[in-house]
Length: 158
Image 1: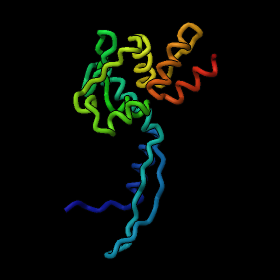
Image 2 (image 1 turned 90 degrees about the vertical axis):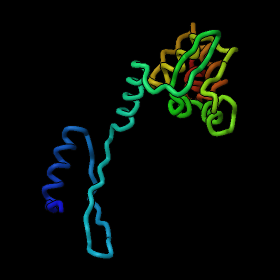
Image 3 (image 1 turned 180 degrees about the vertical axis):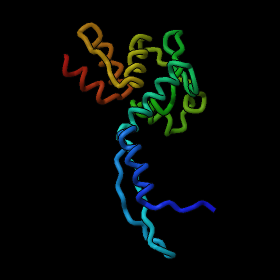
Image 4 (image 1 turned 135 degrees about the vertical axis):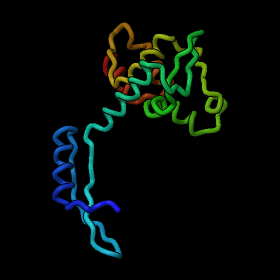
């Protein structure tokens, strides 16, 4: 049987973690029919950034790809969860029983490989340089893939 530690010892360790990981805590009582217990809720403020960084690493190392985008003879491997999180087009594709969902790939013949690579870079990095030279291509891609934030930024340049 594990020895119970006083809450003060647990909280001391939590505050050490807070300093190391930028974690915030909320102490809240939890009622239990046997006895009154306290718990600590840990909230990692940069969890989303860390998650995106891991997905970037997976992409860079070619790990755990579960989908491919084929565009003009080029195959671009990627992760479904990243596509669905960034594009309403892909979210709908993966939610509905479409052939591409189960097949693990989609062909986008009317888009350029450069545009799709730019979209994937944006999806994994969260940033994109939009210039006069690429704004039309990116606006077309954003409209087709239903990437609202991307489309709004492209429109503001035009």
